[in-house]
Length: 299
Image (cartoon, rainbow, N blue to C red; front, top):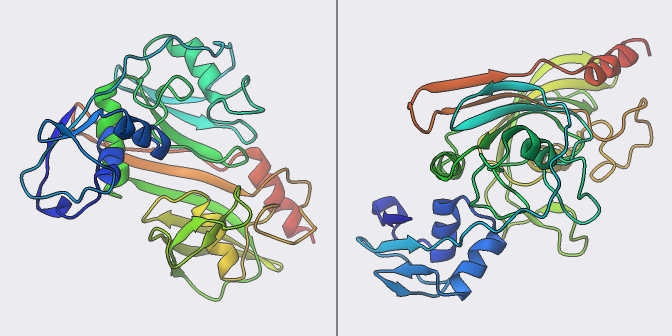
């Protein structure tokens, strides 16, 4: 996989460039660099190398190892599918890919049954086809790549922040007006499973609009200009309006029967990696979301 450094990439660290180019996780990118499989002008380079105009960057991707995870016949809500990608409406409570404590019942297990070997291998054996994720207790739309070409193209769109992503959420308190949160996010320095606002973190921007006031809660839409881990949850908590049911970023005890946060990825738009057609998909609010709204209206 090759790419020539262009004007907008000059000065970027090699590891960041390579991660975006390959649609890789940070860990996989570091492994490739340490193994000498990320080349600059045909020679291995260090992670902190700063790119120069005209540099030729090459990623040597390993052969995809046999999958160690079981294909499981788990029903999928398929919104769209072709030879390059599959768009899924993920239910609340489903983990996206296998990890410690979750080796079965994940979206990947279901995809292995549905797609067989027709999934991209760029992100390794545990995450075949996975270009982006949504949290276990967040429902809604996500796109999965069925080949490496589609994976690389979609990953680049995510890296360029050209993907259109909109969520529905119910948050604590009455937000006075529409607005945006522009605050960098990084891994929490003490609680490593959490994210936090951190001046040294990556820039993160969330635009939110008021849909409805319900008692002392607000239903909002949230559009991601960037896509950091837990971004909406962290940003809304940072302005005093945590997402209802969020046990990680909210101290509120009352959840109205929710298991996890009231957050739904309702819209996803991108350019098709092969046809270049503009595509946009929507998933209406799920039953749990509307039930929660009904409960709040009856308070």
